[in-house]
Image (cartoon, rainbow, N blue to C red; front, side, top):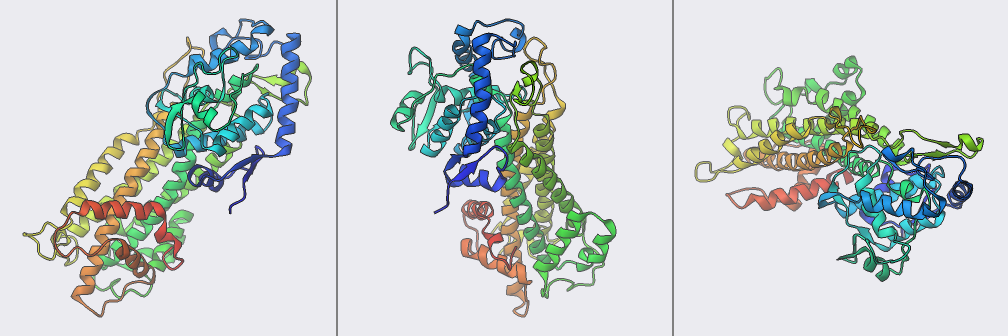
Length: 519
């Protein structure tokens, strides 16, 4: 059994996020984190009790109301009002894995100890995660600045309660497969909802945490997509009886781009031993084959940069103000803009563009495989009985549709900004749009690469049927075997929608990468 993940605000990793979000790994809070949170909370309590110093969000209103002082006996009401007034998301709910990732990341962010929240409140969030109480979070309504205010407020509705009525405004959550009011879901899980004190609501809903959650999942999925794109490239290159010179190590080292060098090396390993490679007198292939290391290598480098930024964000203090106990009282609380989602908005835009490129070049290779004018002797549409059968004709239609949609989705949301809160928040990153679009583009890419793998496997089988002496590469042969365990050779027309679905599941599972001879 996998041991619980201990969070301390500084060591959360992308693999750990995946374990919790997708595999329900349990979470525990470190003792050190509890101590740090308790210390910052004690200072907040002193500020509330004495009214000094004036600290944004503790004894003042929020946003444009920052100059309005709040009496200390209204501190709890201030927190409750913040959550109720900001829970105004719309649209389809986020998938459960996104909610789980966000709950984990938020708990880890608060565990840093700069937020002034009680350890018991963070423990309630962790208890919800471990028990499987998943708040229903509408996916639209956040700009990713001042954090994901609406999504995080919907989360806090389930966690928190009114001091007079614990069933009031409790949001919704799923528990054991049932959609319930937040109040009932927490009751059934045996968890008490908390009355939030001063600063606690702000600590819970201030930060681009849902953007970070989507970025974490999408970056891992995009890396998986790229690796399958490299396998698809190698299989198509082989099916097209491609020219190996374009993958020579000397050529790529001359460019000095590490991603390009690595992709070319992976392809060389996959096609090693193939009798189809260099089987013609062609000097060079089309760009979608010959320049694929340059394209996918640039994608690889871009995704490495995306990963680095996302990993930092997993362990970042992102609410406002932050509390630094080593300084005098008047300087302990610093108001700033760590909640601003610009770092995520930028890399999510990079991720979208990079993932769109994986799918775009793949669609071009699918088209070459299906067109008898460009397929080096393969039958049109890879159909043995073309005319009566249409073969894989429609795979390129579908791929073209997805690639075209990606071109619109990949427009960088981050270059837009609409001011909010009476121009107090006058430059917003639109990070949530970037996150949602990136996730959709990666999903489209998985479907396109699945279709290329389907077509390339068909093409390789046609080569093998035409010449029994043909030998596939050491890596492509293994990939072919795994694909054929899931999807049979297309001898006559059948409903290939089912084949495409199985191939998408194969890509998402990472099964082709698990065998060391394929990866």
